[in-house]
Image (cartoon, helix red, strand yellow):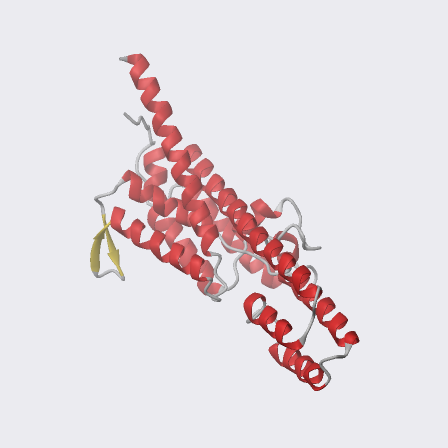
Length: 276
């Protein structure tokens, strides 16, 4: 039912090749130009409450990477699964799919970040009605642990506990909580992972019984490979692991990839049905 006309088979088709080149050049440009321009603050994705936020970051963040390891594994996966899909779909469809998955990942990440942001803002508002050392500790542990200077926080808390009725300390704690909330918006999101996870999903949907070799040794059908990755990302996202990975962005890339493939299949089925 799906009609594709790839022009021959290439191990390094043009879209995958150019995406690899752009990502590598962007990474080394970030390092080479760091004395002159902060490319991360310009092109990484920031939450819209951050002073660093720019609309174009929803697109440019896909070409920024945190380190060599991050870049290597994303680019390896792009080539490993992407060149087969580009040969199967053709360059235009593959590029459209890649970009939409990346944009979808950014959108889902923004929604999840917004849910967390406004939930924390509400908790701070509730805390501000009756600030006290123990309530401040609970607020910090539930909302900011691992994302703020714990030594500075402990020094402030120790001083306040020595004089818990000090109203000025209470007001300062509310101000500090709001500053921590604002600083949480300045955490950048970078990487092609959202688009890569969309490609991974597409590979599993297009070639469900194709074997993928885990660590080049253990064969596993693509459909189960994808299911395992979805489960890992979902569990990690729900548990809120502080590993610096945007798990829901990965799932967002997969979600938008799934919707796009289902749309293409429906449209092509309707076209096939009209013709026959």
